[in-house]
Image 1 (cartoon, rainbow over the protein chains, first blue to last red):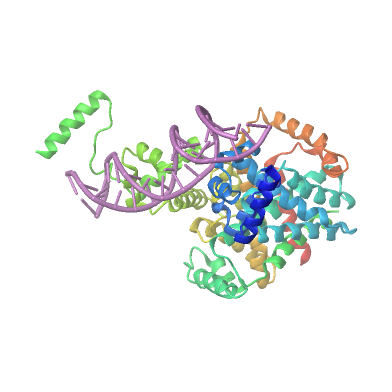
Image 2: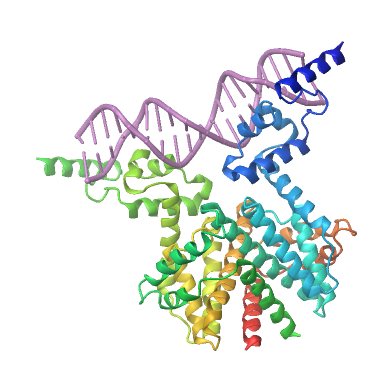
Amino acid sequence: MLEQCSSYVNIVNMKTNKSPTRQRDDALSKQRIVDAAISILDSDGEEALTFRALASSLQTGSGAIYWHVANKNELLFAAMNEVIIHSISGKKQDSDPIQAIRNIALLVFELVEEHPWLGNLISREPWQPGILLIIEEIAGSLQKMDIPEEKLFDFTSVFINYIFGVTSQNAANARGVKITSTNRLDYFHTVREQWASLDPVQYPAVKRMAKFIEHNDNEQFLEGIDLILSGIVSLN
Amino acid sequence: MLEQCSSYVNIVNMKTNKSPTRQRDDALSKQRIVDAAISILDSDGEEALTFRALASSLQTGSGAIYWHVANKNELLFAAMNEVIIHSISGKKQDSDPIQAIRNIALLVFELVEEHPWLGNLISREPWQPGILLIIEEIAGSLQKMDIPEEKLFDFTSVFINYIFGVTSQNAANARGVKITSTNRLDYFHTVREQWASLDPVQYPAVKRMAKFIEHNDNEQFLEGIDLILSGIVSLN
DNA sequence: ACCTGAACACCGTTCAAGT
DNA sequence: ACCTGAACACCGTTCAAGT
């Protein structure tokens, strides 16, 4: 009886082009909620993720979500971990520790470029499993290099701080105006004009720097990684 | 007539120990609003700064604030600039550029330690005058060193990214639990236990790092600055 | 056990009305 | 010109009521 009914509904829905009301598959779960949240975050940005929007996208009541997720904070960090772990778990670590550090750094950089909402989250709870995975990659690579064991934590922290600093700043920029390859030159032009028009007494160095503002974000980011790396190497 | 009346009010208020209703001194201004905002942010944290709380602390209506300040964002950045500029303008730059960079870095570090609400703000709008002042300090110091002119912007960015990365992360930590000298050891103990209990297959390096987690924040921060500096020096 | 959706206690911001 | 404070359009979260 029930089966007949539900298959009838399916046929009707196929005709009307609406998704069928599958009792089993449609059941809420933390996984489904987190996935729906990620899709909203990716397509419409972080301010678009509300419990009302999420509930309507899942075709349920806003309170139902609280049965599976404690609050918005937990939801956001679950989304962050999901995205980070999915991205890292596929990659294989380079045998050269220096290259491995560059790789993980660039991976995080590109991940935040793709999901700007990560920027606010990534540096806020270092004990999250996804974040620990990033720390592990860097600490593991440093361990292979010839550095004193007691320096391991300090050096790892320096990399983490730099990487998260860059990504959260990049995410902040991206939140303002989405930068495409076409408007990128306009963007540089605007900032250069702005810097060039600064007070020469208060900001002489910034003014002089204005003409070199054009740069590739990835390259500049890696330059920082390389600077820290060569600082570490030159210490030994 | 009016003067008589107001001096009468003053006398009465002196007796009742209430502040007099000075028509001139009590007038709202952006400066007074920003100062009141800073004092709320410093004493009760960033989530305590609402227009209602601000209005009641200024003994006015919430809408009155909007006559002097466009919105909350403008208010927050005005508060940030106020605090940064006040802190920087007093200091004199060290003649040694390397020491000057360490000084400005440490100044920003300690400023965010003192005002944790700066952490969220500091890396979000690089064109703010206070932020430009920090950039200027670093760029100006780098200029004195013997580095190629076209590297100036990249190197400055690396420092800025690292400094803002550390400070925003520190502020995030401070937002969780206020760390005092007494509970600091407990904090290290907790994190060490937590790291030590991690899965040895997934997190071997983090586990091994656990015993070195005890550190001085300022020293670790400066170690990163020195690493970047020696990276720059070793390049020449 | 799981879901519903109205209700609650907040926000930032606006705006007619006052002085 | 400047201030008042009720009102508006939102939030995250709770909870009695349903299945």
